[in-house]
Image (cartoon, rainbow, N blue to C red):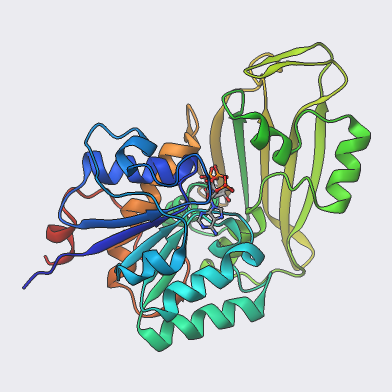
Length: 347
Ligand SMILES: NC(=O)c1ccc[n+]([C@@H]2O[C@H](COP(=O)([O-])OP(=O)(O)OC[C@H]3O[C@@H](n4cnc5c(N)ncnc54)[C@H](OP(=O)(O)O)[C@@H]3O)[C@@H](O)[C@H]2O)c1
């Protein structure tokens, strides 16, 4: 017995477009029924044209979630924003319409501590319609949670866990640099961080919490984060012009959780416009310290856009097969590549 699974796309930024290209060009056994975004330059054009797919897609990109939900997709790949306050209502609209959701929204990766109320509302709406919601991606979603949790299967005792990701962000656009905290004076950086307009990387507390819960560790306090800029000593060439010396060219962000007063989980993320010149290699690594340490290093580190879009697309079978409710990557089988959704789902 098989049926055609219908997929919808909401949000066609770098991640939504990559997920669309992956689905259209490399996957089969489902129907892509609709796509919406808020970017005016994309609305009204065909999806194939908007995402640069090698295969034509005659879907016309719309703008309204209601219109997408009226097409009755089984699942929506929801790639719009990082924060629950901007995504929770739409996620609830999807689940209330009986539609599953997979999303790279960082706060959705482990939303229970940050916003218990929104989490409860999403969970209740999903359960009431028998559908599932999953927040995933590469960070959070894979490197410092799913992957680390899987690697911990080779550990004996776990004394502590450390992780470090260094990302070369030279290829990101100016808007993303500004959002992250690049291109500011140290004073502007400090003020923006205090006021919440410079968020840096979102999602470290989610990964720390996912690991702690899956390993049965109770953290003493909420995850602590610190955030320090790197200030350029010489001008930095970017795709949108030169950044003057004296402006931020990156930052290091640290997140940690303690158990019984001792640091148990500590992650560090460096985002930098020229990490090699600063003596840092773009890579992802973590070590689970103990009697038999487990150390993993990925060189080069995961490329965020292809890896995140792949995690979203590759999570679709797991989400469609999961029990109803708001789930996290620690609750579901890890995503794996598939070719035909029809064959993957009905085996
Ligand atoms: N978990 C992870 O590992 C991971 C990795 C990468 C990215 N992310 C997160 O995933 C999200 C998407 O990433 P991105 O790089 O694709 O971001 P992006 O380039 O900013 O794209 C988001 C797109 O969604 C559109 N949009 C905003 N609100 C919408 C709504 N209510 N309905 C429909 N479309 C809407 C935006 O339109 P406008 O441009 O007109 O606003 C934009 O085109 C971001 O929050 C990012 O931080 C997570």
